[in-house]
Length: 552
Image (cartoon, rainbow, N blue to C red; front, side, top):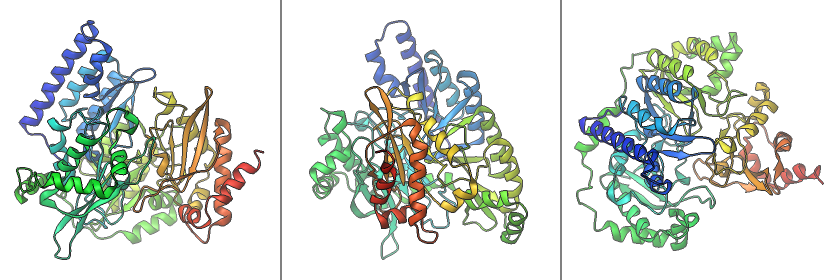
């Protein structure tokens, strides 16, 4: 993980002092709400339905054990004893008192954490694959490149007041686990015929009110020119992006209006002024950043496949967990483990102070003192010895982390919804729980296979409903909460947006609606066929017919 130098630490501490004075002036009546607005957004502070919400930066999802312990202490001392993992791999506190926020930021600074650029019209947290550095299908470890982008983009004076918020994701593997095609900029590591490293560059993806799958505008950008090319993209967006209508201000609207081809031409023209200038990356600089992401002190271990198979046969619960929650590691004798934050009855992505403390202990004992947050709102221990998996599973069961549902129907991505967010049209968390309770048979879930179910409480799509195999969107109908369903979305390679099934449904109907959708899938699937493949083969018609037939 990247470690602050004295300049990083000083910058963060100075920001805390600055914001402390701004909050003091606001509470004394010297700043109006309108004057405070841009200041608090620069520090990740929102005013939600019942209390402020503070969003903490977790660069590319990496956390050390001492940071987890600090987060546990902060949630106890300043919040209601829990935190929330967001789909941007960040952490949110839902109940801080406004006057306590400077103290929270000061506490975070002691463990090299902050909330800078987690909100506002700026470049947000750069995200990547939760298995970065350990995945067997990886071309490069994307984390050093995320860090290079973070250092370039943080406090960049030209991009602190963009037309709208801006999100970048980097993928370094064969499989896209970073959802790069629905980002403002998506970067995919590639090698040319000469074996040289570069990036495919995508622009104009995004969800929200106008969901769009982005377009690749450059098939091979040599790594040396990555930052200058990114800067050219941002300059074109800053110059031509709309500022008269926030609903049309994202870069995706500009790319669509100009066409990807014309946008790419403008970027190339701008890039000629930047190419081979001070932003050109050197091998020395890449090596400097990469040193923070070297492999931990792995032992030379044998593969424990036979032992794990024996334990799985003897303990079926362990076998189910191993099948769904354990990911193959590129280092022999090791595995990556996903801790599910989706047990039934818990808001998806929530983690308590006691769990945070326990997680820090687990990280120290099993995974070199580090964890990762995921955009699916779970937690990963990336470097667990295979020989320790059974013991770890026992501890995770005690802590509520061992639900074997990763990638299954109940591993739901879910925004906080109307229970917390002032923008939401409807609640999300009760819908998630109702569906989890309806599908509480693990054997049945395993038979169904991988199904992404995503829930958003409004069109801002913080729950990524557009790219769920099954997507649920909360809508308002004359003051009442209803839910619109879409099918066939995907956030992976060759991403697709879901098709709207039809008119929306009342809250109490949702478990039955999902049940009918699953019934149609089971009836039409070919042997072990995934939900998405079945949907693409048979189309939306049979699902629509079944779901609405009984309602008329």
